[in-house]
Length: 261
Image (tube, rainbow, N blue to C red; front, side, top):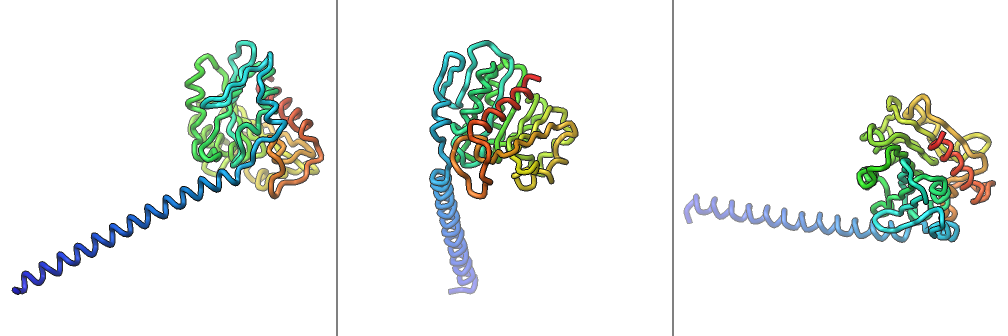
């Protein structure tokens, strides 16, 4: 065999080896991604905080509020309105867990829409409000609210879409560093649980510089993180001295004062 044929054969073998290496590497990567995705799906389901009885009861329609479940959970008041509230749930919390407070808000003439999130993590769909706003052209005043990770995700939407909403409400939450709202003209309220007038949420005070100077900060003494919804105790949370009903009523009242000053 001539030298050129030997070199050609070596090159062919080398090419085949590289091709096989790439093939098995890709198979390995795809397998890792599939296993990781499956693991994330299982984790998100088994680690989700489910709505409890108070929340489930608040999902029933009344003569003042009609509730529908489809793409979104919609609380429609019994009278026409130009004001809407879009709500982003907290991380790994069933969206229905926030029904008690949101039902009270809807009873006072505000269209309220909860946007369920992929894997119950709002960070995977921070632009969810876009579709809602497009679906309700009759609403001229939009408030975007969110609890915990939902509030963080809402802040990201507000930063990227400063003209799409008129106000934002953060429940025990704050913007990420990437969503600096300090020069934003929208109205902002931060409602937080507090003990001895100090926020229970770590880093909340340290992130105030990311919000407009006229942001309204309201601490609810004796409240805790989990009682912004109704999904039971949460790891690392403080023990509330307020009852679940008391906290829900206070948050609803604060929100209504903010929405309808």
